[in-house]
Length: 442
Image 1: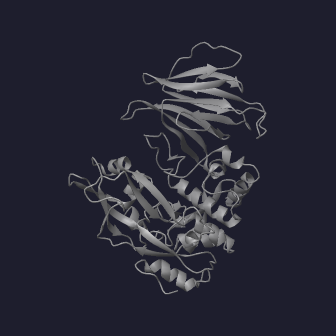
Image 2: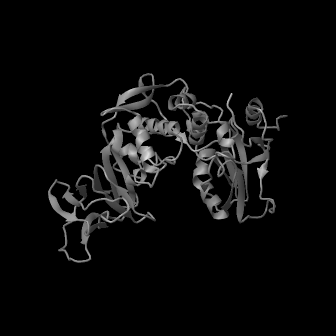
């Protein structure tokens, strides 16, 4: 049995058929906010990252962790030297690139970057004191060079530009939607004009080798975590990326996004983290079988769908309850580590206030006076929910769509929480998590 000395959660479902009102509101009122209490973070399918950390702290290996969260799979050596295209700037109007200053904390030496047009013709090669801004003008990308000491003649526009740079140099990217700049060391960049329903937009893509260059930049978990949990994440991330290589998505000019829509990719910022960055890079390297292949989770000889998430409310989800479909290895398993206050202090229990505007927009109604949880999965997560307006209209959403639209951490909400004794037995902890509808007699 799994050992867990931290507090455990005893979850009791609210009556499923009841209509939910804020405590201070009557049915005819239009409340300003709705309060939600829940547990866990993420969709709940596949590997729990908090659970992987907990198992690693208990001495389990990466292989044991992966086998637990993806039951029936194997870990095998698979070729992974392909180039993967990662979108690092989506639906932009402009973006700026420059070299990282030689005096930065990363200690990068002076470098140069080169800009090429769509036909491969070289625009020019520039030093670290010259930045380039690429802006959309009437559907064409117009580059503009900037320097504190020089002026440049206007450059002709194009629909695509590619940027490369000298080895061991680092490129800095500043996107209009980002609050900070990001750094990239490997591969090349492409800046492409793509047609969208909102008109032409820029898509910025980093093309680099999956085997190591891409994986070194995955920022899914803290690099300070135990080695086995880092290795499990590296293998799961490699596997996930391999399943995305078969096609280029037109909307992003990419195989996958650098966000949690796929998996979080932060480029050179990950391995250059002070103190801990090299621990993640080393974990990735340990999961490489040789120079052109790495360890991958497989099912029936093919890369598995290795979904992962932060934490659960005590049980992971069966994929059928979240997105539909059937995968024998994406089933619900106990995840007691996620309901530990020591391991998961932020999402063991969470509270969120959602505004009237956000609720109404989520349901596509003019206002929301109440909502009703229609169904839950066997883990207690909301699988369907209905919102009611003051006009009597109502709209039904899946739990996952609702969570995404109002930005709740998980679909495990509408639960009440009680703290169990510290010395609760392992058997009783699991019974409490499974009970859901009552307080287990621990």
